[in-house]
Length: 380
Ligand code: BGC
Ligand code: ZN
Image (tube, rainbow, N blue to C red; front, side):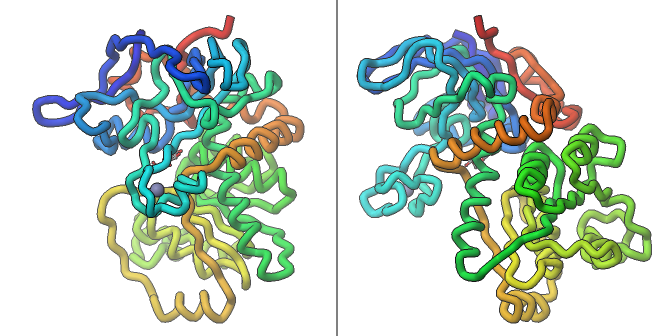
């Protein structure tokens, strides 16, 4: 079968289309899935461009892709799936260490040993190929009604994990959030924003995508306010004092002028200064959730005394969040259905670029409008 892999080359990893043996059912709880499409995200960009992927021990190559949408082809007798069912799958697998309490209790998204694997990212083959075999406990059924946006269930699960965590944290107080701020308007930022709108929050998105971008359109379509990072006046420039210098984003000054006072902030840009600059914008008892991740070794000067005061004297909370559980996938499916009901067609509009597997090795990620999805097979 055809697969997109990263492979060890002479001096660096490279991406290629390879011919691999088709996987087969080996146990009664196995599910054989015919892959329909696979979404690409920032992690895939890092894998393809910056060799972020970790090959399985001793392997020469690894199938990439972790945002699966497929259909059950065959299932073992104990799997509880039938041919024709639409499915997606969890990404992370437990580390297997006896001393890792979260992995031992099915919470591998909170793995403490660091030895977890993630399909298509770290130490395990991913889904960007024609057929996948997966244990039933990692396979999540997707209702027929979600077929046109089923490929978004995995990224939505990341949003749901955060919202669920915020719910737990905020049990500490009677909390009635009104306003959300999302930094970044990539696919994850858009899903966070539309989720906040669906929850009835006044939602602001601060982004560098540009006012005329497809990203900004999607943000506005769900009734969120799009704020362009390049709109801030030179006098409003960030701590660097240089206009449009992304190192000091200018968000804090801009938000003060426009009275954006969020109860919750979703950092989805992966631009580290934003996480810290935005902290002081939070209302008392607010939560800053950091979802965006950057590789590299950025440094910045931050006013630690002022931040310390903000956090302590106003009960502010910062939470980092990665990956998601089965429950988050299931909540994500329900949320996407609700979003589709409230904003018909918006979800399908997030997928702006459709590709064939052969296009992935030479893909220019910077040319993707909002989100790219690789079509592997047609449904029928
Ligand atoms: C995936 C997560 C994964 C994370 C870190 C994200 O792109 O959606 O499932 O845990 O990357 O590898
Ligand atoms: Zn673990």
